[in-house]
Image (cartoon, rainbow, N blue to C red; front, side, top):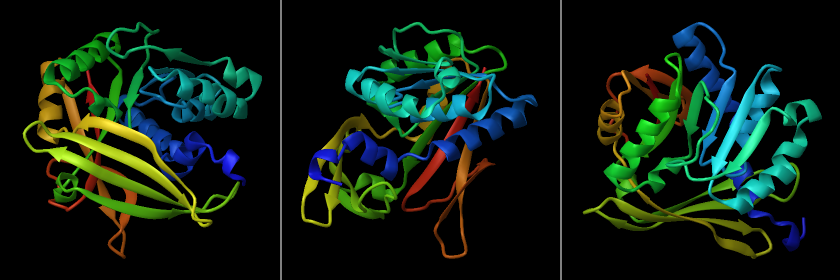
Length: 267
């Protein structure tokens, strides 16, 4: 792969996203709750719409809407993510450039806001408004799915890297940097960098200015927004002490230095 081919959106999908695992989880929790599969999904802050793409690929009766403010990410998704679908599958997905706080969409059964994307809403007023809008559009047999992270490491300025194997190109290092954190407001500045074996890099390929929301804050705002059933799913550990990628419903979490959880909220 030449330097000109190093596409930050493609690298992000390889390093960060796992749409198949995310849809596996969403399918499981929806079916566990309602006894049937869902058909209509909306992916908020969808970026390149990798999850929407996976959703419509799964079953012939599914439809998806992806909502994001970033026209560049949406255009990339149309040119790359959606091009992996058949004509019939592609007809069941719509990408919409718009604000999650104001844009109207058809009624979904599931709304997703993953990769901590809703943390871009940094005030209680903004996040509560978002939750209220989602609550208003979901049917009584609907579900909002979020993720969150925390632990003592999330309060420190630090960087961590991970080696990524790319079967379609060259292997590379993914670097996550928490560059700034304000304990008074919980505002964070974070960056993603990509570094390559020839010494070149994509520095600050993605940057985030968001708030570190805690689970109690999120749950209280969901409750205020009118959701009646809120569940936290905690990740387990394998025999080597590494995260195993399997999330189970819990009433109490573990005080790990770094943790990731899902939340679901039903009307």
